Amino acid sequence: MENSKINQVVDIRQSPQWGEYLKYLGWKKHSLGDCKNIYSRRAGPISVAKMQRPANLNVNDLKEIDRLAQKNDFAFVKLEPSLEQNVDVLTQAHYKISQSPLCPPSTIFIDLQTDAATLEANLSHSCRYSINRAKRESAHVAFFQKPGLDLLSQVYPIMKNTALKQKFPVSSLDDLKTKIDLWGPDCHLAVVKSADGVICGTKMFLGFNGNVWFMHGGTSEEGRKTKFGYLLLWESLLYLKSHNYKFLDLEGKDDKRFPSFTKTWGGFSHFKERFGGIEVLYPRPTIKYYSPVLKFLARLYSSAIPL
Image (cartoon, rainbow, N blue to C red):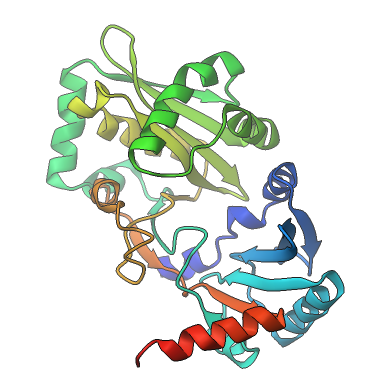
């Protein structure tokens, strides 16, 4: 029952705000219809395209993608299917499995429609202990809807240093500000502070279509010595629930199918798992080549791999 509800969640990457965000990054939008957006841009001498978590694509949609590819001279289209996608249709349209995801290939959803007591019951024993310890140490969490630049500038160094430490792509301050401007009241920033008011951790959430996604976060060096991160996420669940969001996507966990892509994700995956939730594996990303050169190289590469 829960999984069938999750299958109906429209991914944030198909939102109007995401389209404007990618435009800011230099991508051009092409639409096949509601929640079936494809984005392209130049990459040196070629044009590339990506389609992330679109609504279920049918045969006619895939033919339209072919027409777009030919019209715009796409070298390839990278497609990351949604949970509802019929993958057999993709195979029949000559999409091949890709081993390099662009967005998290697996994740954990928290059902915020359950009551607070059930959410708490779903926490692991160690998670509840960590939350209570943070409370005993007088940690406290504050929330800001559509946060201002002053606050963003305070938490940005924590986000940046955490990304560098975990070897994640580092978002610029302007990138984060653009998201705040685009999502407006659906952008929520949470910060956890020590007893003396020092910010030790932060999380940014973006909402769309009644659901919400964890997008950015960070923990200071001092924060890593505490259990404050547990209180930060726990109170975030209650806060987002109070804003009537249905599901929270924690945006990623380690995935044995993609050991290289998720090899550094073990620590925060274990952290997320302690909050219960529903683990989800997305269909493998796929790719379709239109460039004759890339088609040849792809066949050559695949033939060189022993079965």
